[in-house]
Image 1: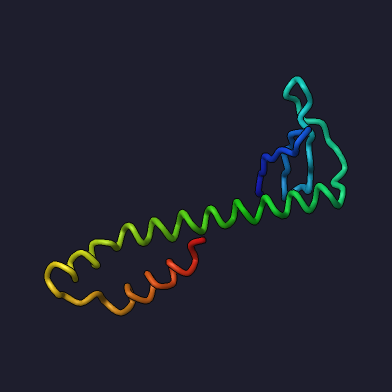
Image 2: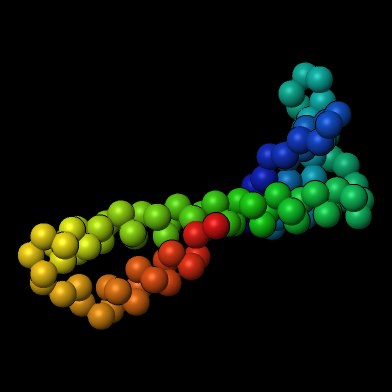
Length: 97
């Protein structure tokens, strides 16, 4: 299940993907069920894409960081970086936006 908190200019919402449930947060901080209009769905889809890309970016950057030592070792000693690591690093760089 994906849970997404998002805001428009005037309202705050909580979206639960598994149940396809949208709650509009009232002035007391309570979620009230509301209809998912095409406008809301477009906003939700856009927000979910951003969240998914953030996860991809985080994972790719973490991998690059964890394998930076290969690059340093290559620069300092000339020992080659294994081909699998070179390819995986290239793939990770492509994934990051």
